[in-house]
Image (cartoon, rainbow, N blue to C red; front, side):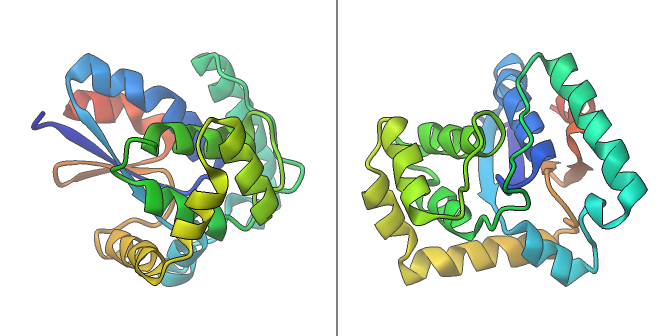
Length: 193
C-alpha cells in the first residue's frame, strides 16, 4: 500500500477518539494504510504555546456540544470521562510500545474505549492492566514493555517530530506532506487520499 494517513493522537483527546472511529473505514475505502503516531498532547501544547479548548470557558462549552454533534453524526458513543483531564502518559507509552505489533489495533481500541466509551481512570497502572486484559492481551506485559527507556524516548521523539512538522494539537493527520487538524477535517483527509 503506498497511500498512508499518519494519525498523530493522544487517547486523552475526545476529538482524537471521534476521528479514530472513522479513520479505518476511510482508509479501507481509499486503499490506504493507517499509521499510528502516538504523541503527548500536553507536550505539544507546551512546545507550541497552545492550550486545551477548556482553558477558554465559552470555547470549552461549545466544544462539548460540538463533540455530541459529531458523535451523533458518526453514530458512535461518546461518554465524557469523569476523570477528565486524565494523565495519559502511561497509556501513550503503551500505544508507543505496541506500535507495529500484532496487538496494535486491539490495544489502541481498548485505550480509546476506556477513555471515551466506558470511561475509567486510565492514569492508574492497575486500570491499564485491567483494560488490556479485558481486551484479550497481556496488560501487565504491555505495561512492563512501556516502561523501557527506548519506548519513553520514542514517545518523546514522536512528540518532538510532530511539533517540527507543524502539529499544534490532536488529532492531526498527514497525507504525504499535507497536514489536516481536527476530526472535522476527515473529509479533506479522504479527498487527499
